[in-house]
Image 1 (cartoon, helix red, strand yellow):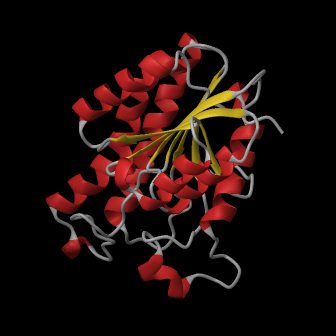
Image 2: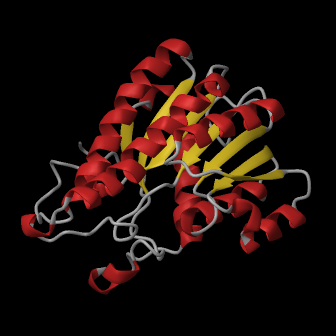
Length: 256
């Protein structure tokens, strides 16, 4: 299967949130493919991350490690300039940015646990940073074909919310879904071969899910490698006709 629909040659790929979990697994899986020319691995401390440094040594010349805090718009502008110097076009951009219970954000169980700092932290990382990443990389996505995918979460589905709780995480992922859907409409006018996707990787054994894994049904806690492979299959199958939609790891569309 092609990395993305319509790809004729090798791809230039950028992964934001590349230093751990699903992001790191995506880096590893994509670098194993012959149709990937270059991977830009982006995180706050990418250049000093042991796992990314090992990948860079193993795949000499195919990996660029870029330090960037995606919550800082000036840093995102600098990232876009740096990538633009090395590549005229990005075929695939994946954002794995997301927080649930760290850096002031909280998995609130009740209204009483809400506070402004937690809400702002959740929305900044989960919704605003991926969209601003797309904004600054837009000049590199104008040629055909191009896919921008961001990790969302099933709990961001309003129609699927029957349990309540997790106010800021749910709301910020719902906001991300709306922002991506809106961006897909604009991007379709700029590049009819462009695809924008919100994707749910399933409950994966990462730092984000670790405090809540006790409630995960047997067989439903995925390894980062499995989640990464499911996501790669999704972006390989979903093209411009599905731009602006929300999909689960299992290939099923998720309702808003």
